Amino acid sequence: MGFTGSGLLYGLVALTGTAVSAYQGQQQQRAQKDAANRQATAQKQAETAAQRQQKQAAEAYAAANRKAPDVADILASEQELSRLGSASTMLTGPQGVKRNQGGPAQLLGD
Image (cartoon, rainbow, N blue to C red; front, side, top):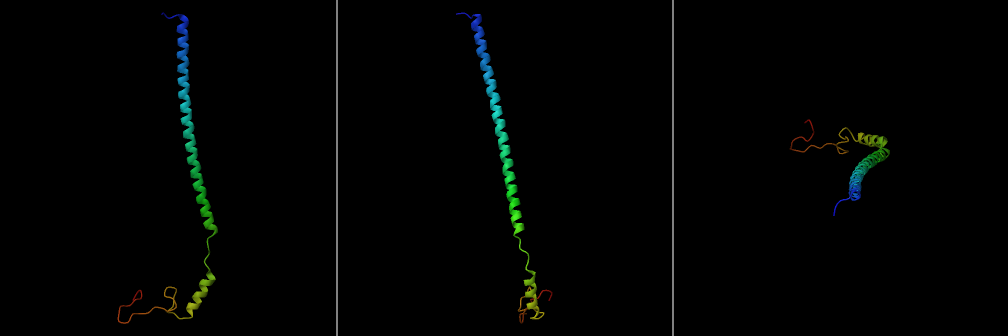
């Protein structure tokens, strides 16, 4: 059994076809890996953007629902306390400060 010219030619064509197929397979694998990496990057960016939007929405909601202090009510309660005398403050309440009998002073600065 010897090699003929046409048999050698067919063998080279088959070998070349196999090499081309292997090269194309490698190229396809690289393309798939690149596509997967791009998709993962896009997914991370989308998640980051969604978290940023959620935070901004929460901040906007909190800003819209902030309550202003009721100045009129605060002044009214202070006027009520001022009628009770100088011993009454916002810190002590309407009873004022009481000293313990026979013990050290309980007032700051005494």
